[in-house]
Image (cartoon, rainbow, N blue to C red; front, top):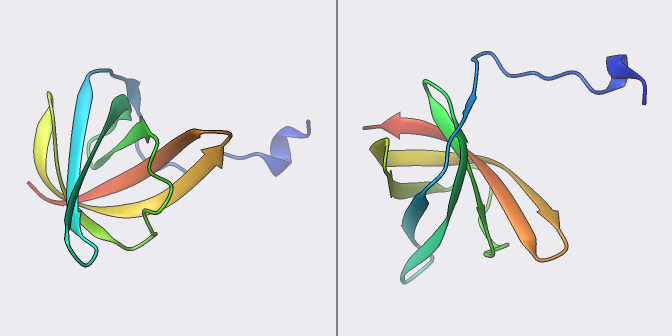
Length: 92
């Protein structure tokens, strides 16, 4: 794999983390999903879960062992039955 084609565009260092994450949102009814914390940074986090319908730009309420508040879905990566989502915290 050519490293120049696979650059990491993250502006902040991330560190591995674990524990439960709860995310809730209106779509159009209140829904809550649970997942596992993968990593955290100063302004965001990544979680693994099984709900493939989160959309980029969607605002959610979240809580995990290190923080709670509101976050925006930045990206989703879906592989087999596993989903990973990256979030940007917008209010704590």
